[in-house]
Image (tube, one colour):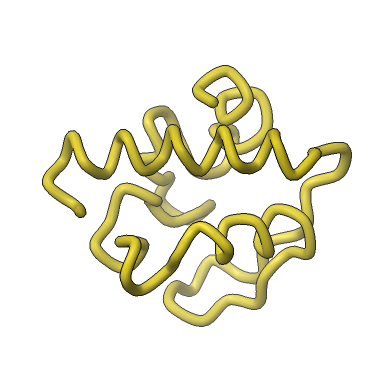
Length: 88
């Protein structure tokens, strides 16, 4: 999941999903904890895009060329980072 995240998401969401000021939010943030944004939210965002609603970074476009398996691995990687930072 880490390699897929780095190749497809890190350019906006930053190294270790820490976000980038003015570009995209951190995914290692309480807003994205599993009870508020389940894994299905990651799938929908990656495969369909998502309208901005928590942050003022603008809409996120869909990411072309990802399989559901790719997104599942990337979501698992983000969850691992979240747990390592006390977000369960």
